[in-house]
Length: 218
Image (cartoon, rainbow, N blue to C red; front, side):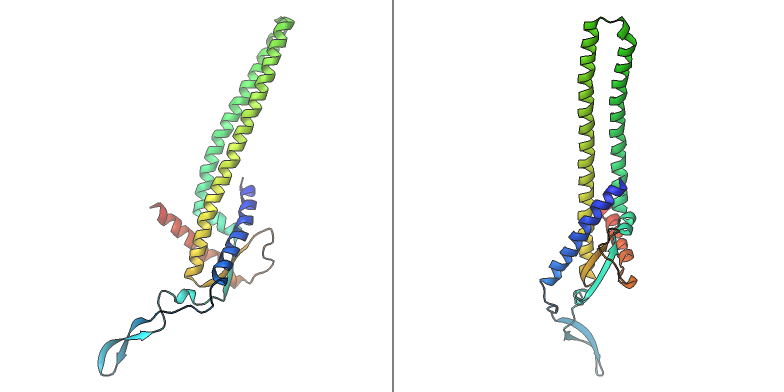
């Protein structure tokens, strides 16, 4: 399951996050409109007095719009507690679906074995009727298996989408707070062929994601 999830997540993250940040910052001028704020300044003949400055404390982080970085998708997802919990919940459901599948298979196998044991004592009509019933049951088992498989795929897709939406939202928050113009995804599929290690912000982004996730569960 982990490999299939990784392929889905790498593709979606690589597009979603990069495009999200490009559109967000490309549509804005490089310079941020600044609002005057009061700052305490000491003067020789008076106590601290209020003066007007152009540097707003809440916008300093987003003033640098030339910052570009990347995160490694594998490390980000493997280390994200939200993904760990989602996988754990999905695997618990998968075990229940597998138990249902085993019950279906064993029930059909028992019916076949019973028929084989009794076939010699049955009339041709009885054998034909029993075989027809077994064929119908085999079709029903196959349909139930397909239903379980479809349910598992839908649940996996839903789980993946929920985790990605949370990650994308928090990567956007992190990017805005820290003044990044663009945050890219480095995936095993080769989204980024080369990147300087000082541009790798996987560790701080992962910390931000886990802090937000744990805080949201309180």
